[in-house]
Every structure is written in C-alpha cells, then in structure tokens.
Length: 119
Image (cartoon, rainbow, N blue to C red; front, side, top):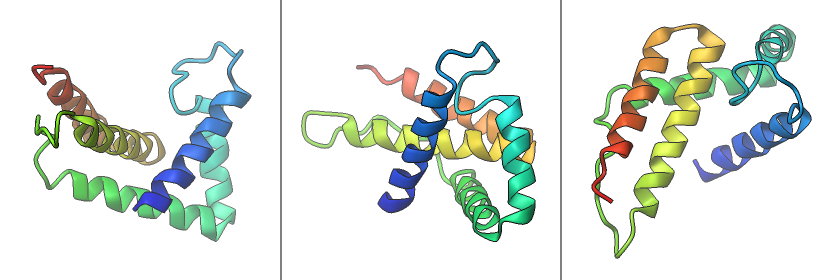
C-alpha cells in the first residue's frame, strides 16, 4: 500500500509541476485535458489501465468502511490525517476517471469528517 501511495504521489507531483502556471479548473490533481489524455492512454496501455482499475478497486473498498474518525495515536493525529489524504486522493481520482459521482460524494464526506476533528 505504501508503494502505491508513493507512486501515486510522484505522478500527481509531476502533473502538478507541469501545470503550475496554467489556469484550467479544477487545478487539483489534473485538468480536463489531462483527464482525456489519461483515459485515451489507458485504452492503449495495459499497465496504466491496470493502475486505474487498482485505484478504482481501492476507492470502492473505502466506500465500505466508515469515514476516518478522530483517533489519537500518541500525541498526534498524523496517522488519521494520512489516511484521510490517501482516501481523498484515491476517491477523487476514481471519480475523475470513472465519472461515478458516488466517489466524489465519499471524498467530500471524508473531508468533512476530518474538518470536524476537535483539534
């Protein structure tokens, strides 16, 4: 799971750096042009298609578990924050690449739950 997160972070960082100066909305994760390009490439590239399917499967699993809750591990919430980020990124990408709005709604629910942490 950590390797997947690292690979995903590298891909997102590269995309974000490439489009830092552009104005397309939303500028989170990737633009609509990137979305079209990724979908087109996935039809021809089995590895990319498998990565997208894997991410979508992970996002579906997140839909079956409760949202992240405030749970201190030691003096910090770092573990919960990281879980929230991982879930939101995975769910958001699943939404953008499948068009299934349930992933967007769940990503929103994860963010709202994290925003309600008392600290």
